[in-house]
Amino acid sequence: MIKSSAISILKTFSGNEVKRFDDFLNSPFHNTNENVIRLYRILKKYHPHYDNENLSKENLFKGVFGKAKFKEFHIRNLLSDLNIHAEKFLLYVHINENFTDERLIIEELNKRNIREAMEKRIRLMEKKLNSAKSKDHDYYTNRVFIFEAKSFLMVDKTLTDNFRAEQMSSTIKLFMISIMEFYFYLIVEEQRVRIKHDFDFLKLMMSYFKDHIDDFKESPLLLIFYHLLLSFFDKDNDEKYFFKSKELFSKHFSALTKVDQKNIYSVLQTYCINKIDDGFENYNKELLNILLEMLKFNLLSHKSKDVIDINLFRNILILCVTLKEVGILKKFIFHYIKFIEAESRNSVTAYSFAHLNFLQKNFEKCMEYCNKINFSDFLLTTNENLYFKNDTKKLMLLSLYELNSLENALSLIDTHKHFIKNSRLIKDNIKKKYMNFLNNVNDLIKLRIDFDEYDAVKLKEKVLQTKELINKDWILEKLNQLNL
Image 1 (cartoon, one colour):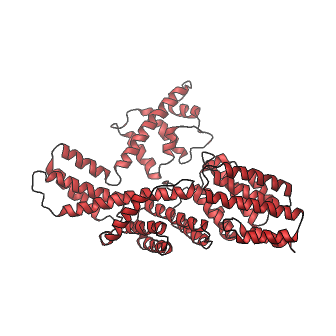
Image 2 (image 1 turned 135 degrees about the vertical axis):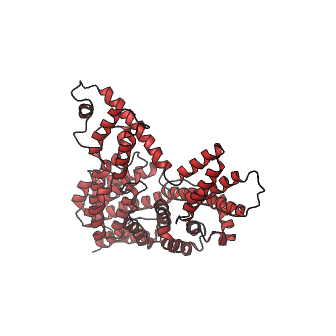
Image 3 (image 1 turned 90 degrees about the vertical axis):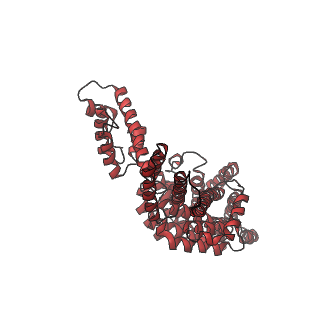
């Protein structure tokens, strides 16, 4: 397979964009190099994966230049030219989305002082914007732009029009959406890694929102954001606000953009995960239902093509294992594994079947699959893939115990402890849960090697009293088996 920036861009093209880019290259205004056109027409036959064994620089050269002697730098140069055109095409696509082209035309008309045409364009843009369903970040960006453009038309007049109040309202809403979106990113980040952020300004803004809530009733996205944020910051009423935000989300779902739908689902997930971390096990089912909804609505990732986000895949899998939902897990793996990016698919498949075989009590098979996992296939760095490593180490430990390979299990506990202690990203409360788990399994193994009824009773009491502990039910089940 050829590594090329141009091919990386081509992979993202939809079927319609493949055709449009062909037209783009054939326009003399954009391109006058016939060889670039020939190159693209060869490449597009391999769309969308571009991983065919026949796709080589030699074959590309032959397709473009015929029987001429192969010179690699010619193909490198053509791929470089194709990449430049592909980037220009991306710019063209972007300009034609979200009223960007309208804004640029109006700005250029204003620069050239063509006021009548500018006024006509503003009216057309405003008419189109008024028909938009989603009052999101882009909507208020365009509303604010329209008000600013109207101000240019009125520069020599007395500014008495009543649109100023609406201009201020739209500007405030745009600001609030921007700030709330950014703080949601911080909230999600706090849940994932060991880091703390300052939310004081957000709390001041939420107070303003509460005092002026009637001003935001026509902005469903802001209302959803507001109630979602309260679910994180009003600890006395957090569940009330969580379910209210879900209700509003469901009610206005079709009026939201796909990006906003995905972002809201991400924050709902974070709330559920925080509740689970605080000991509310019932939120495992709530979280699984949220993730299954995302699958139902085809909200698989933030990418334009249908690939499933690798962390979404992991979360669904782990929840199915936690809730022992073998049927759901089987259907999920077999249907969605094909949506994993090709470079990660083999290792994610092994990771998935390791968990499925563990649930089915095929512990030797589980170990086989664990040993097939290449963690560098998941995400780019050790820090990024640490959760997959953690899952696999835990799974191997449980399987070794079930297979009565106790010495190997004790050795794995030792290496797993070092892994947990040395991580600078795993949050302290998660570290504590895992360390308690590893210490308790260590004591469980010692009891299995040399059983003592008194020690077994003491360990059971300790497990029952420990809140910060993963796999508590499994440990208790194994303790009860020792007493049989």
